[in-house]
Figure 1 (cartoon, rainbow, N blue to C red):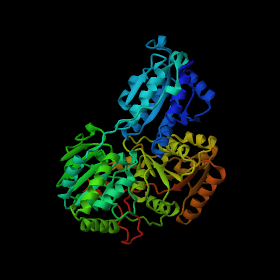
Figure 2: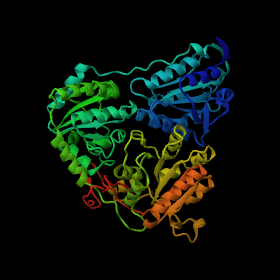
Figure 3: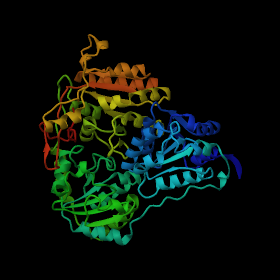
Figure 4: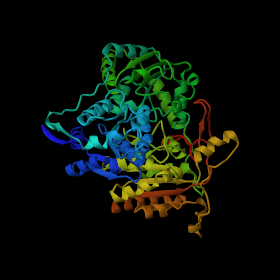
Length: 593
């Protein structure tokens, strides 16, 4: 037992719980915690330029590797409110991050003190737990509870708010007696697995819908083995993309209104049974429930009981961690296959493979300014199978999901439900902080890129290199396309004549992203013609390795490109012809401006 400040005990607990990186911005009300971090010197700190950016860095850090928990730190008042978007996007996607804020002294609470706000009440709707710690000895205990909650059942974020005097108070604490609490995760029983497989056996055209819960559970290998043993094709959700490689014979494509493949939608419509594991039936995946569920039976497996039946009632709902479920399902399915009790779905699987070969959208265009589809075709050529893509929202993300290829879990790092603009850049920095050796490519439209462009300086300062592909049409492209339904094009153009780019053919596109990136200490390359693609990708990779800073790779697009999307999975509007039917054609859909 030793006597120490509550914040010194807090840092010891953070170490014991596995925290080695933090992202944040210091301030008066959180300086005691920063003094403890400095004294220990065991946790690397990345100084963000905006606290929202720090929260997204923490998200990227968590999403990069199984078992990671990102830590975001900020002072009182606006720092906490800046974190709310990060808490929301983490909560929506079942991502554990820990946000620690400073707070005014206890005696000054509820007295409208400078930068004093009830952040715990504000954060409660978007966190698993949000608390202002009012007793010094509860600081390490609150952190212990925070880590237990973040890891248990459906993962999610926690906010711990620390009044200034609580941080500074001395307590008796023995870190040697401290142990992390074992997380609670429900597990499917054998009887439940047998019931599920009996229902599956009655289907003629079944599918497995693989959600992000499989990746959270680090159970992608189990999913692939279960699919191979049963022979049932797999439809990954956007959050589950990468759980099965894109070129696996049982990967049947993604389904949805936007981030989907043409063949994935067709296969979903042709199926008669859907086995959902670790997914949430998000509306961009399903469209209307009536169309999505027509003529099908459903099993839904989820770690959180109240997720089952939340969107529609399945024929069988089972509460289980995705990894635990797949393990027992695989055991039973293997026994049944050996005993000849499993149905043969090879004919159905071949039918799905045939759609995958033939129902592809065209990507090869020679136009100048560039069509976005061609950019993704070239990205597939330039970047290897181990590339990790980071992106958030907009036509850039939608087209990326339709055209790019993902072969491994956690190689598609996407803010799926919240979709805040600006997320991509700081999240990519968090991924890099988590893994110094990974091949990272971020993908943004010009507006997403501009939202938190100041975080480029963080990548330069802290040597966090990655390639950031920016597809620039000087438009809020997705919103412009959505405004077609209102017969308008209103306040969605980012174009203006930049007086500082006189004589530059791109002056009318407004912001000079190359100049901004270079001003931030980064490198940048601009591409305007198809013949420049190969050289630009090589140059970007050379610059990144040589200088160890983010490299912006900007592609100048035509102002307007409508990307395939619709209001129902059976009513997708196609704007381009099909690609030629051959094995090497890009396997995806299009949606970008």
